[in-house]
Length: 75
Image 1: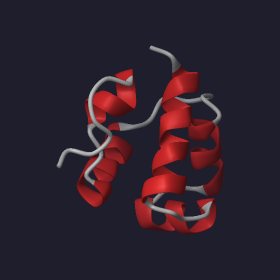
Image 2: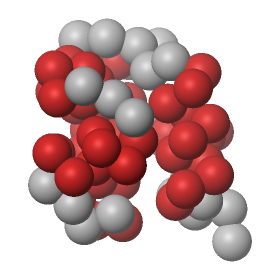
Image 3: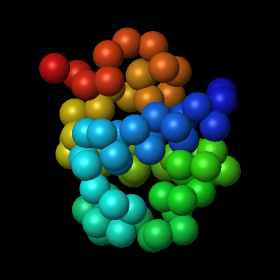
């Protein structure tokens, strides 16, 4: 599992799909500012709660998020 690439994909979701700055994104996702920063830098693994929230809120394909395979959104 490549945390750096997962972090890049989380950053992509925040900037290209949600189109939100970190502060607003973490408020909507129920995270702390340092948490999202660590995730985007590939310094930590996303929690189940975060993954579920991304999927429900932004229709993110979790297979894509974790592996890079498939479409970004579930549509």
